[in-house]
Image: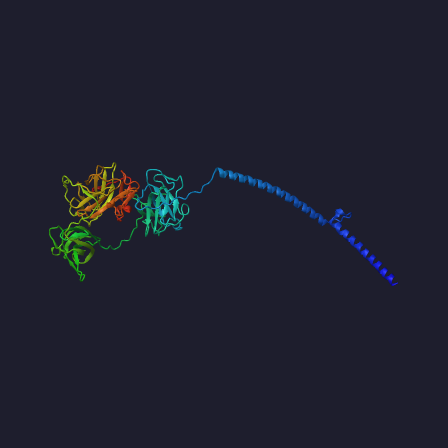
Length: 580
């Protein structure tokens, strides 16, 4: 019985397991039918699955279209790349070379064909940045400005004119900061330079402590005058693009004037010789005045001074310089000449002494003006100097007799009197038609003759020749000119000499004791100026001084640097003693 129960239990267990397997397989069939409906007879489609399939199909179509577009775009890019490659083969763009920056060369003179005509270095009322530079063609020809440069001192301003830029005669061009150049024009410690395409200097202007003209407060510009000097514009803001104004004239309130006094005298004198002095005094009251002019010896021990000179109005009656000449003049000004000499008692004195001039009112003895300076007293000897090879043209016949009367007050030339070489021409219309023009900056006439004056010419080999002079006149008028001519020119000469000047040459003028009064020399880039007349002041020109050109002193200035004091002139303008 127990055996039967066991068998029955096992049979029941088998039946239950079979039924469980059946139901399990039925469920599997249901789920597989959902995933792979094509493999089953019973299909149970769901709406969500259908939508997903449609979206997938649509995405596939979009991808196919995008692929086609991308292939088309790649074809276009390839075609453009091929075209660019062809262009590069046919035309290769080369980078523009930077312009060479010009440099100012020492001794070069401006050509002045194109000039700085007006400079607004201070800006205007709206802004200090509103600066501009105006240039003008003052030559008679159109000038091609291609490659020309404008630079300032520190080269923060660099203007290079474009190819094809031209400027007509008298035409004005304006260059504005911000439009045509960058960088500021400084109010001081500044300079502007204009160079042509070959870096030859055309013009320059300097502002060391201040500009030569213009006013920052009123915003008046710096304008060029016809003689190339500078003036302050009459108009605030200047005259951009127009002809320059007549210039600003400041009206000052009348102030009480202090008397002015000056004394002109030789800086070196000989103990046994008479010498001339010229006294000028102005801005006085209308009274009568006494004059005292003295040479004073300074004691080494107590610094006490002792009068060692005598004075005379005519050279005939002499008196001690310790005393005043009474009632010498009346009025509010005076200009006159006196003679001085060292007293016999002190003619063994040599060395530095003091020269003194005093003017006092005759009535109340009040001193109204006084002048002091130093003078060197020398022993009785002839001063000689060593110069390079010197030849002298000794005249075979006496110089031309001068019939004119020497005007009263003329002072013989000596080392203490200033005379300037004002213009030199090495050939007016042809090489032998030379001239040398002198200027007397003093307010008294100066006597020059063989006894007081020597004219020396220096050739390119540094040989110095003292020229023989044929005198027609021998007085340089006060603030006037004197003309030496070699050859023939239209202007009447004051004296003549045999020509010798060339494209490389020099001129020296001295007194009778060989004291140099003034000198000038010039040369070319290839051949320097003669050393004898140079001493650091030689002028270097492109090809030397050509026939038909001259070197002219700028505004009669004298800075002891001829490279700055002279300018090249294409139309020489000689002046003689009759020139007003």
